[in-house]
Length: 115
Image 1 (cartoon, rainbow, N blue to C red):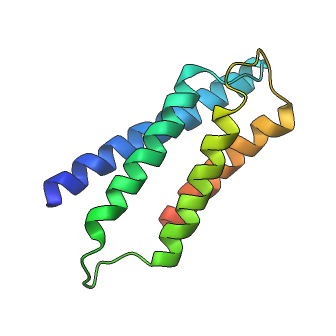
Image 2 (image 1 turned 30 degrees about the vertical axis):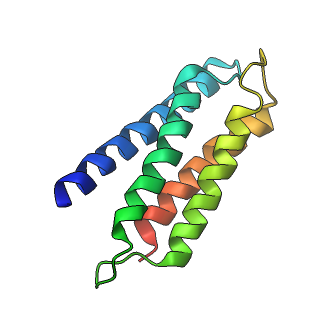
């Protein structure tokens, strides 16, 4: 079970890298559009996050806080919606784009700092 958790965690981190890396690359280029890295990063983050939390629901001392998981799920769904809806537009609003980056960083901060 530990091997599965580590594989899912690795996939989750790859999704985070795609999402944040793709968003910062677009932000620094000055053209605010949803590129494939951002889209796939958000999909991978959402799917692997759900899969990562599912096997942990057996009880025990290492169980994450269900409220923390709910907050992370809410943030991941918000990011996915913010990425998926305008994915075919040539350009999105700068504030919308900054919102995607901010929510991504907040989601990572919740994972790291909420114990």
